[in-house]
Image (tube, rainbow, N blue to C red; front, top):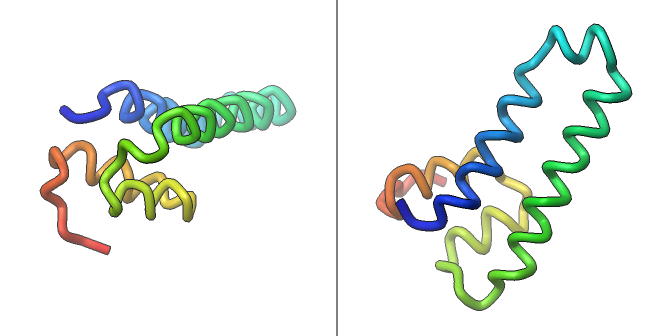
Length: 81
């Protein structure tokens, strides 16, 4: 898989979002975790600018993280929008 490290960050973001029990038990901690993973994704994006496909760049710039993950999981073959 291309950019497996980014895919892992994107999957972690989805896992945090999906953890409703954590959100209900500790909404502030849940929000902090979501902010941290989002910052890590932004940092990864900044570090790899100029090395990414135009589609991946577009998705990351627009914060379309689900689409970015779908593109990565298809090894760049996904043609959706």
